[in-house]
Image (cartoon, rainbow, N blue to C red):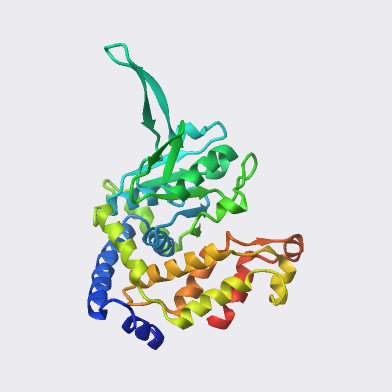
Length: 341
């Protein structure tokens, strides 16, 4: 439920509360239908679906980490159809070059004999891009994609080409096979709004999946909204007010994750580097999107605690002492969230 602090924040917003409430409720109804349509195709991964939708509603990109065969590719295909987005998939390999994803210029000759260069856009010119096994590409190719993610445009031969709007990247990584890979540097990991970890489905969901996907006919995703609707939803998410207590919790958690003077003993002992200001910005946007997705008018402390893990886990690094002691990043994050749970 919405806390009294957030009700007050809604009342104190610059917009007329009645109009804002009506827009939030209308968006909540449409998102409920989106979740339902995706849930008919992707079984047993409701948390993953919700976190992915939160990422898109926040206008960000997601790093999806999971074992093979858990439906990462199918999730992107389903999202593209349900959200009405132009989606593409690129399989990242060590020999993939930046031009293979960004595009290149080719020399053409007209009938009159005049020569000119024409830009051939690469697969990055879409609205929803699946970068499959991004850590298998060379650092040069990774940097080219991540620069496009950040700047929302591509530079080829000194000319800038804007990417479509909206533009989102869902990059995947396999947590098992790390040999021959190029791990993403910390500064590039920070470009992803959220790291979404996919685990195996429970027995009930796996049984449902088994029956639904091996019959004579398999359910197909159905479109619910379009690209313009998603852009409008992203703009609305940014207008949702956040109470002072929730803002304070975000700052407390993010700042407490940085080692140094005044840090928690376990953070100072086990964390090599902590989350920067971009983590606070990501968490602020994500909790607004989660509230709307759940049909609520404003975010609460529960939203902050629920999303702290996906927002922070790829923005923190443990030192050797932590690995020797068996301490995990999620253990540290739970300790940071404990005062607000």
